Image 1 (cartoon, rainbow, N blue to C red):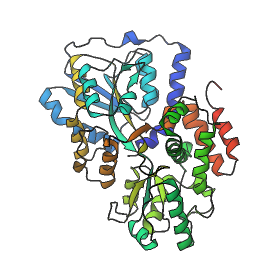
Image 2 (image 1 turned 180 degrees about the vertical axis):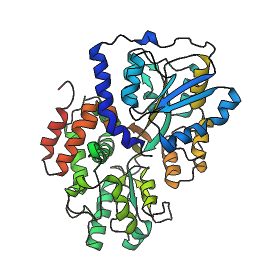
Image 3 (image 1 turned 30 degrees about the horizontal axis):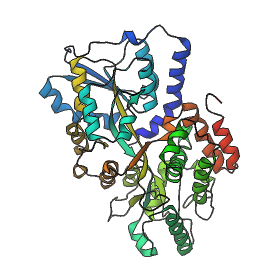
Image 4 (image 1 turned 135 degrees about the vertical axis):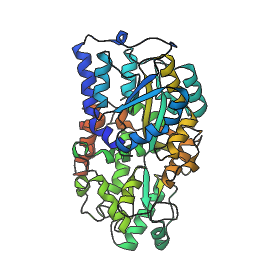
Length: 439
């Protein structure tokens, strides 16, 4: 559940490594990877990803029975330096059979240079049946489909106490204006700041603020502008992006609304993002914005999460009632080899059977429409699956993970911090935009 955070921290390293290899013109190349489409394998398939520790153990459990039934040994390894090492290994002719990519852009970079094999027809058929077109697009490069989605996570939840909402006489808001009205009511009834936020995250400080802005860009301006923003066809200095900052600022820059339990507006930058769980659980703070993984922090702080429990969550509301646009993340499975064993593993990982195996043991969630939400023991993760499976949901991948690292994990993070510290939004947006490599 914390893998998204780690990915943000190491993004600049990944981009630097890829760029370095490109500039250096190393001797390795696509021809150094195996090209035995459909050839019989050796019974071993190596898989490499960022997914570590407990989550890695759950992955290995999720496919253990299939390995025995199919007499294929999946040898899994992970690394916190995956984003930098995967390009080096591919260039050096030592890639794994399969890589699980946390950033679609990194998969696209290697695919465009010929290192990634197009996905087998059976994998594409599964993706066409069990995922939305939005998700398939993240594994497609220049109209060639390379990889199926793997795990998923959902951002943009607003965490609150159902009992306190009843006490204050407010309901879960259906629109952004409703959310502002609920905020105002809570502030007036309690005399305290309703919201708390923590953007502290070491070198990645600021990333929770990018999640806020991404939610508002998608909800205010729609998916086309969001996509153009990710591609820098809509610059940060565009009015649509300023509107998103201004909307977030109506809450986060208002000293009457933040930072409950911690201090003034500027304290947002110094509070570690996970520390916000405690004031939510003890009632000092009424509202906070964070992804689905936050339920783990709340549990660690002594809270119970559920629709009728101490703490529950609703999705950041749209501008108009009924909107269903969400921002999230996940991984894409790409293969460097294509013998029969590798293709068999790729196909299995794209099935509802594997996804259900994963969620039933608490290994995470998937946007696979064949997943049964009732198999998940976490109410918020079950709710996340239902949102992802809703055919009316518009899903967009985390923008800062899609942008070049110099921007997404660079000037965007720094700009958020500067903005919270009081720098005018126009100046902040200009400085973020200057981070684009072509600027």
